[in-house]
Image (cartoon, rainbow, N blue to C red):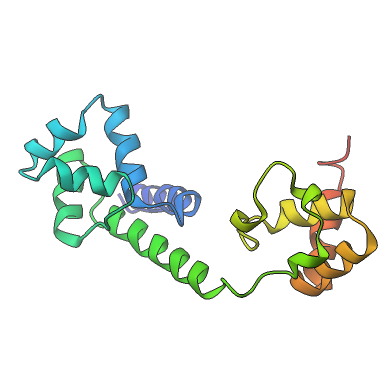
Amino acid sequence: MEVNKFVYFYNMQEQLSILKGIHPGIVLERELRKRNLTKKEFAQSINEYPQTLGAITKGKRNMNIWLALKIEHALNIEEGYFMVLQVYYDIQEEKRKRSVNQLPDLSKLRRVLFWDTQMEKIDWQKQKRAVILRVFERGNEQEKEEIIRFYGKKVVDEIIKDYNTPKYAS
């Protein structure tokens, strides 16, 4: 019995680590689609307004404890799952708000390096691996120096070293 609880806990932890920072409404919407349930039907089945569920699945409204409990019970999901997702999402949002001024000096990076995205929308922390690899693959010396200054030499060296290991080499 104890082994089963551990395996279940491990699987839940693994799943949560993948979903960290994602709004619980997005996970809920995916779960409803998987079960072929409409938001309206489901909302009515748990005695909730469809607009409330709609706002949550669009990420415009946060999950609250009582609603999370009702949803988890109705979908037979582990109690607390959606609130844990909400907390991780709130943490991610707070970090994002506080790091607004923690950007590399964009005047030192050419926009052409990031031709496929808007530089203003890059999450410099979450996407640091991709940013570092792109700048070190295509950037000039000034751009590389700015990325080293921003992330730190140790972080840059680790990412480049990891990329050059046999599992990534062609």
